[in-house]
Length: 471
Ligand SMILES: *Cc1c(COP(=O)(O)O)cnc(C)c1O
Image (cartoon, rainbow, N blue to C red; front, side):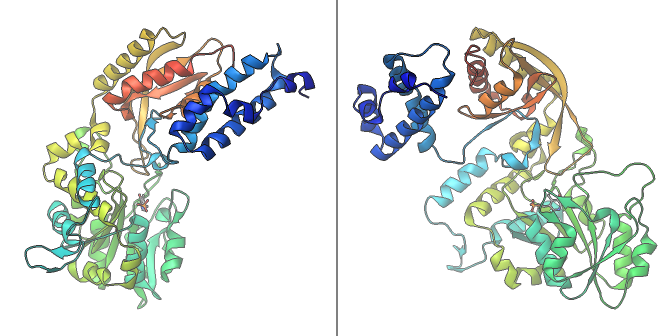
């Protein structure tokens, strides 16, 4: 219970508003915001009265409350969605916005979205055109597909394909591929929403071509293959290769669809990252339709990409659902810029952040870790810092078995628990998202940009201050 003597020494909101500090803030911020923020910090002070071992004087309370006021105002005026520094070491981090966009994509968004654009206007002919014209040709050229379509995300792409080709009919899927990706994308649920009937074949660990073959009926609309993405099965396993399924589809006259997921446009295996089969490779195995995300290994904006044979993809562009799932101009501007970068594989590896982060040599990540450590030490921090080796996950449900060797900085303080350090980092400006392990905060430098190092150093130093006062 706060004692009444302590409470009486607390200044009132009205008296604080009349202070010089508050009057200065009132000149640059709306009154309602300042008053609201003041009420909040006075409320916090009231709650803290009882916890103070030595009762504070009225002057000390005024100082403390007024020192908290600018931060409280800033947090009210900042936009709720903000940039964060990803030191968690997951490249395609769904909770942190998946793929960071290259500068070229940002410039394209700014240039076309701040005013009007030729979104659906053919400048040469002077007539209306399709918004997809800005990406369709590049997608065909980059993947070898006959036809391409783009919708809001990959879940939408799968929904549209199933609704367009299999509503009221059967779709055959291996039991090993009835996956859940990211909580709300479950193949059986999407299937139900589309109106298609799921026919499961094989077992969790093994499915043979004959399993599909035996399940084909006059009602079969599609043979569907789904990339398991966020898990892998080891041991006594077997799945049917896309090429074999495509041959079966050909014989039976049933289209084959593959949900590739990652959207990888370049083959990463020669660069030491096996398992990410590129869209071109998947298409060359012969399926009629392939779907993928725009913001995983493609490294672009959130989008769902549908590629494949003309007779299967073109009708989908006219399906009523396509209008409901269509992408906006900012997505198309960013996507076209990212696809343009992919026209030259080297440039894509160099300029597309997801690819650059995945392919950066460990030694360069380590050099960044050393710079971070030097910068934190230069601030005179009491924190203990050690560079250690770790593994970065590509994330985003792509490549579940891959861990890229990385360098991380393990941070600890003799008196501040690691959970407090982690929370202070998370609640700082800019917020830093890090992991905690073995009594330390772990900062993975693979997902931190070079130009973020000074800010990260400042955030870490700040989190390591005030050991006496743990909030
Ligand atoms: C990620 C993923 C999805 C979902 O894609 P979104 O773009 O998040 O909608 C669907 N299928 C596979 C195989 C995936 O990897």
